[in-house]
Length: 171
Image (cartoon, rainbow, N blue to C red; front, top):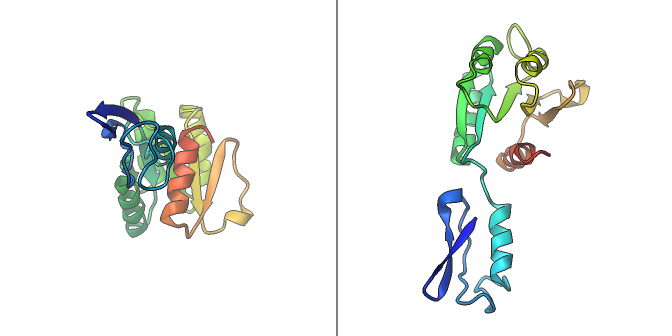
């Protein structure tokens, strides 16, 4: 987040999609109402809550329409841009089109036809650096291709958020 000075208060500039926290800082040396001791502490708190959505587009590949809708809703609520695909073929159409900026692909393991692991391998030939998140209810039995991370179903909103954010910053 970027902070701007307005009269005697330091207020966040929300252009970077930071989430507000309670408290303000009347002066960089004064304590904050919510217990943070400096403006720098507030800045670090905001960095920890960034949604990273400004340039983040996620391709969600899920054959179950209800599950796909729920994942898309959660990611959009977290302010990500989302592309949807019901199967590997639809996902490959997005991946083959260089006009589509995609920052991360999240795919289900159990897709009809080409499964999620096969899609991940094919994706590596099209977009070698694209982070890939594979979701499966059978996570303990799956060998992952290089550079692919796993999230076990069922997962919480917080687990999904943390996994996606971690992958987008290079984790």
